[in-house]
Amino acid sequence: MYFLRLLTKKLLFIVHIIAAILLLGGCLIPYINPDHFWPVSFLGLAFPYVLAVILAFFFFWLIFHPRYSLLSVAVILVGWKSAAVVFGFHPGRHTPGSQDSAITVMSYNVRYFKNFDYTAAGNTRLRHQIFDLITAQHPDILCLQEFYTSENPRDHDNKADLSHTLGLPYRYFSSNHNYENNHSGVILFSRYPIIHTEKIKLLAQYADESALFADVVPRPGDTIRIFTLHLQSVYLSHQDLSGLQKVKLQEDTGFVASRIILGKLRTAFAKRSRQARTMAQEISKSPYPVILCGDFNDTPNSYAYFKIRGALQDAFLKKGFGLGRTYSGIAPTLRIDYIFCSRQFSVASFQRIKRALSDHYPIVAALRYRPQAAAQDTAQNAPAGH
Image (cartoon, rainbow, N blue to C red; front, side, top):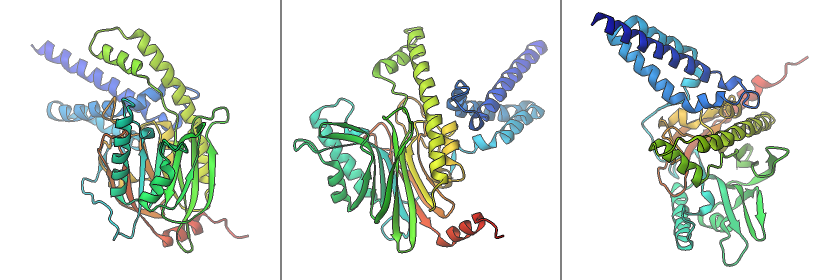
C-alpha cells in the first residue's frame, strides 16, 4: 500500500512538472515571433487549461504535501505577465448611460449581418435585431468588423442606415472587398467630428484584411485617435469543424482534418504576427491618445495580443469578470475581441453582451478621458532640453 501511494505521488509530481514546463513555455509567447517558430502559439491556446491544472495541483499539494505546492506558486509568479491576462476580477458592472460623462465605445464583429443559414428572411430579421442591440447601447464610438453594405436598391445601405438610426453622423469605412455594388470591411462610426482618417494596409502582399484609424474631437481642444481592425482569421470551414466533432466523438482518427486545421492555424499565426507588428508601429506614431477596438482572432496569451497592446490598457482586465469569452463557438476560453485605450483614459465600465446574433459577442466600454493625464504623459515623453 505504501509503495502504491509513493508511486502515485511521484506520477502526480511528474505530471505537475510537465504542466509547469508547458505553462512556462506559454509565457515565452510574447517574445517569440510565430513567423520564426509557430508551434509555440499552440501553447497560448492551451494556456488557460494548463493554468487551471497548475492551480488544481496547488490546492491538492497544499492539503497532501504542502512543500510541493511551491512549484505552482513559483511557476505562476514567473509567468504572471501571461497569467494576469486570462481572468477579469471585477464582477460589479454598470451599463453606461447618457448621463455619464464617459465616452461609450462599442466593438462588434457583425458577421456581415448574415444568419448561419444565409436565408433571406432570417438575414432581414437578424439585421433588425443587431440594429436594435447596438441602438440600446447608445455608443459614441462604434467599431464594426465584417461589416457589409450595398448600393443595390434591393439590398441595404447599412452605412447610411446605421448613421441615421444611431445618430452617428461621422464615419469611415475601409471597403476591403468590393463586388459590383456590394462592399465589406471594417467601419468606424462617431458621434464626434472626424478631422482625419487613414486606411492601414496590414500585409503588403495581401488585400483581404485591413485596419483604419480616425482622429475624432469629442470636445474642442481634445483629439483622440480611434483604431479598428480585423486580424487574419483561421477560416475554419463547416467541414473542418465537422472533422473535429468526429474526432471528439471518436468516430474518426482525425488525421486528415487535423493536418488541414494545423496548416490553417500555422498560416494564421504567421500572418497575424506580421499584422500585429504593423499595428504596433502605427500606434506608436499616434500624436494623440489612442482607443483601439478589434477582432484579433487570437487569445490574450498570444504574440499578437501583447504586441498590439503594448502599454495600452485592456478594458476587460480593468472592469470585466471571468474569462470574457467573445467568440461563441469552439471553446469557452476564446476572448478574441478587445477594447484597448491609452493611460490618459480611465475605464469606467466594461460589459460583454451575450447575445448570439453573430458568432461574436459585442463588447462595450465606458472610457473617461483625463486631459491632465494626457498633458503629464506628453511632458514625460518630451525630449530633454539642450
